Every structure is written in structure tokens, then in C-alpha cells.
Length: 297
Image (cartoon, rainbow, N blue to C red):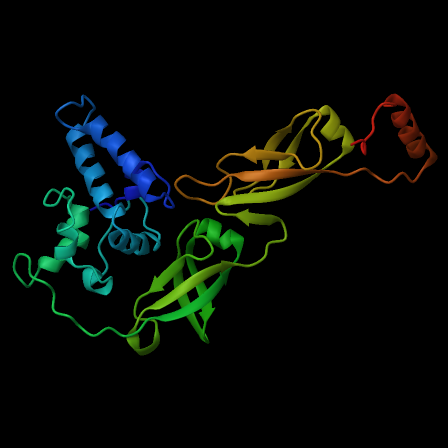
């Protein structure tokens, strides 16, 4: 069974509000409705759209799904529900199927998560309440490169060294749940923070890099090499670019759906003249631009 990204199905970002989710759902429901659509696999797409909307429109179900998604699963990835998922996440199938939507017509992925509440109690039965150990919370600081790449990392937490799976592109404030690693056998919730980076500032999923340019590069335009977290790329600087100008490298920010961008903020730096030839060059430059008044206005 494959993991479903409900945000990707509706074509919205994980931070989309309820109105945007509703608008996206209505548009796609019209597009793929089996009675009118001529799209390939329209019926299957229509079911996926209804399933995604039923989860994302409800605050409790969406929060539960987001906690699972934060563990790093990706669309199409082989997926098996965590043990006792429904109980551990506090989900009740009676609540889920009783809130309207396309109940009874959900796919295997949905049923594997929430439908398991039916097991052992007959149709519509509620699960027997069981005591849960309290959650333990901790803060963990990650290097920006670690958060960008994701993967398994050994982290020191409260005097212990734990193997932690870092979701690719995880952002500050998001949490990683380590089941059974908290006090008394409860879960450990790690709230992510970034360590300060010498090169990049972070704005949501966007990265900001300050790029020094020589005056002649900024004035005449140039192709310059710019670092990104995925490796250096070539950036075209338009002629006449001034200090403070932000140039965009699309998709070069933090991974996500969609990924962030990297913004390059230009800083024009004038070299200090140390020889007669260099001082004379500045004098000729001033004579060539007699009307240039940088402090005018």
C-alpha cells in the first residue's frame, strides 16, 4: 500500500486555510466527477479528492494526519500504519464517519489508518479506552543542511543518544514523534529549531543569501556562481542591478510541496583603491558620470 499525500491530491500547500482547501476541492470535484468528466481514471481521482477533502477540512483529522505526515512519508512510498495508530493518535472512526463527506467510499489508505478502529468491536463499536503514558517534550536544534536533506541522524537528547528520522525539509516549530521514547514509556515529541547559519537566513521555506558583487558586475551584468544547499548554480545578474535587489532561484529553498525558493540579495561592494592607477580609475569614473547623484532625494 502506498502513502497518500492529501495536500498533493488537492494541489494545496500544507499551510492552506479552510477556504483555500474548499475552493480546491470544488474545482477538482467538478473536473473529475464521473458523470461529466472525460479525464482518464476520473472515478479514482474523484474518490481520492473526496477522501483528501474529508480529512483536511476537519481540524482534528487534519491534525492527526499532519502528525503522521511529519514523520517523513512521501507520496507513493510503501506505507504500513504504525502499530495502534488509531488509539495512539486519539482518533475515533465513529466521529470520522459521522461528520459527512464521502463516508463508506474511502480507499485502502484511509481505512488502514482510521478504519482499524472497527476491529474487535463490531460495526460502529467504539474502542475500549486505555491508559496512555504522558508525552514528554524536548527541543532539538538541527543544522540547516540536516533539515534540508533529512534522513537518519543520531542526536543527543536529555542525556541519551537516539536514532531519529528527520523528515526532509522539516521547518522550525514542527515536531517529530518518537514512540515509546518518553518518560514512563510514553512518546517523546521533539520540537525542531534551526541552529544559526553563517550563510543563509530562513523565511518559511524560502532561503535568503547575501551576494557581494563588484560594481562592474552590477552595472554591466554578469553570470556569477551562487551557492545553494543542493550545490552551486549559475545566476544571471541583469545589468543595472543595485544593492538590495532580490533575485530569485525558484525551487532552491527548503524541500516541500511546493518547495521554497532561494532569494539572492545583492550587495554592491566597491574596492578600496591602494595605487595611483586605481585612484585615477575612480577619478575617471566620476568624470564619466557627472549627473550621478546617489544622495539626491
